Image 1 (cartoon, rainbow, N blue to C red):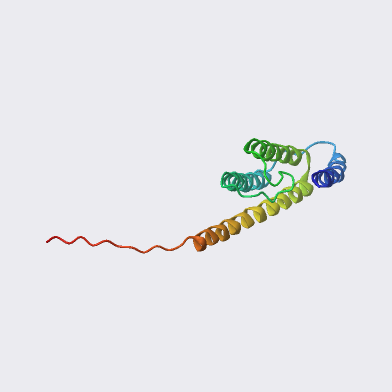
Image 2: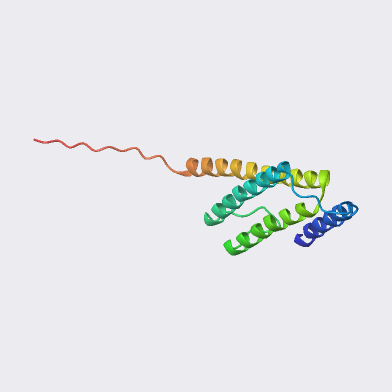
Amino acid sequence: MVSLILLKILLILLILFPLNLTAQHFEPLSKQDIILESVFVGLTCIDWYQTKKFRSEGRRETNKILGSEPSQERVDTLIFLGIVSHVAVAYFLSGEVRKFFTVSFIFIEAEAVWKNYNSEINYRKKDEEEKPVRIGFSVNIKI
């Protein structure tokens, strides 16, 4: 399954790179590109934190690339490489292709963060529902 996902990513890159290579030069990042990349990196870092937190709680990962029970090292390595490779690929793309590429990944990361957030709320509610409620009091009487 992971190889199928990697194959899809490779196919997307093979489609996007020729579109960019028709230009004679690479365009420098605009202010808008830098803002979009910053949003992508910020969302990915939030997702990274959520993933590490969930793993430390013993919860299963749903990201097929990471696997269901990745080690902390695997999580750190793959997410860091994902951020670096995304920024590198975006740098080599031009104009509207770069914007489309970055905005697409912003939506993917935003969805992941949102799902993780909702998963955390549901996990906490379930955890609270399973705990028995204990009410007690003590009385000290001096005679």
